[in-house]
Structures are given as structure tokens and as C-alpha cells.
Length: 295
Image (cartoon, rainbow, N blue to C red):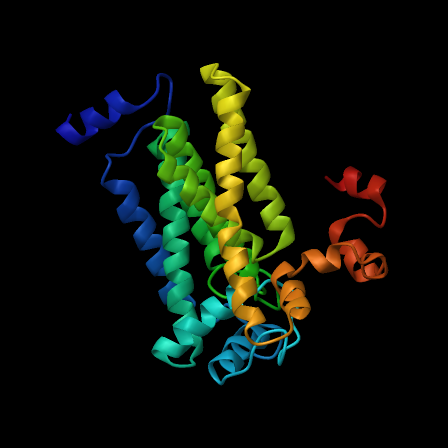
């Protein structure tokens, strides 16, 4: 038995499957990702349906247009301006966003692997990473495409979920070694998620709240320290939305800037919109009993 395989066997939980040496999972995952890029280049989008919005909106911003004032938009401002930044730096080209999205995939994969390897082991974390790359990162199983991380239908989803993974990772580090900077980072990350999509933000807040509450219960520290942690996270979480509001307000009336900063939250309370079959079917509320049966 080599030193690396002996180390893998010693690190593995009792009764677990064979464990690869520490260097092997990163190599395998990089090869899988590179293989998917090589095997199906530029084939993960539909050239005529939907994805044009993800290119058009940030392009218009680089031309001087202002979101919500010159461009009608129903989500938060994070993703359009984030993508416009890369267009401004490297040119308006689909491949610019492809490279950025591949970097996001790599970051989410690294964070997820680091958490899963602590929860389980290297073998299970490697399998999870491979599934993420094959089924979510670059897949094109729908005839329209546009539902992968490399070319998403809505960048708010991938940006929001990626930031949520980062927030969960920060909380996991805080649980292991408490630090104020980790809580500040968590709050700032949640603020960025707020500027993406409401449903992703709701899930992110729930995950962070459960993580901090579970730590407080396990450590027996009591309610007061937990409350201080939550207040710090909530306070720092307001920083980026407030900054977005001020920047938008410099180009339009404050009320319009506020509605734009709220993004999708404005539409969540629109009863007429929520009653449309397109949305009630998609969110499963048209026939809740049938939706539960399907689940």
C-alpha cells in the first residue's frame, strides 16, 4: 500500500467505500469539466429562444442604458450589471459570459466539495461533484437548452444559488471557528442574493438561520449571542441593497429606484400575476394536492 492510499484509508470513516487519494478527486473533476467543454462546445444554448435576453440586457447597459429606466426588467439588478462589467472589460461576446460562468461553476464545485468531504468522504464528494458537472453544469437534456450553469435561462438563478453556496460555506466555517469577519461576509453575500431572485434569497436566509441556530443549540451559548449574530448578518446584509438603491436613484426617481432594487419581490405580491396559469402551473399552486402527489 502506498503512502497516499494508506492516508486515504486512515482518513475514511469506518465502513465507508474505497477512498481515492487526496490529489485524485480534483484531477478527475477537472477532466470531467474539460471533457464536457470539449465535447459540446457552444451547444448548450438555443440560438433563437430566451438566451438572447441574457446577452442583450448587459450589452445595452454597456451602451449607456440604465436598468429599469431604459430597460424593462423584472428581477434584481445584480446579474445584469455583473455581466455588463465583464462585457465592458472584455467586449460584448457570448464567450465572455461562457468563461465567467465556467469560473462560477468551478467556484461552486470547489465550495460544495469542501463541505461534502467533511460531511461524508472523498468518494461521495467526488461523485456529487461529477453529477453536478454532468447533469447541471453543462447538460443539454431539454430541446430548448438554456437550463445549464454555463448558459442559464436566468443568470439570477446561477448567481443566486452560487452565492447561497458561498453563504452556507461561510456559516460552516463559522461553526468550526467563530469569527466576526465570517458573519460579515455571510451578511454581504445574502445582500447580493437579495439583488438576484426572491426564491433563492428565501432559501439562503433559511439555510443561514438554521445553521447559526443549530450552532447556538449545540454549543449551549443561549439566545443572546445568537441574536447578536443574526443582527450582525442582517445589518451587513443591507449594505449592498442600499448601495444599489443609491446608484439607481442617481439615474431615476427614488421610487422607481426602490422598485428596481426590490426586483422580483414587487411581483410576488401581485395577485393577478400569481393567478396566471403560467406561474401557478410552474410553482405548483394551481393544484396543490396533485403537486404533492407528484412529489
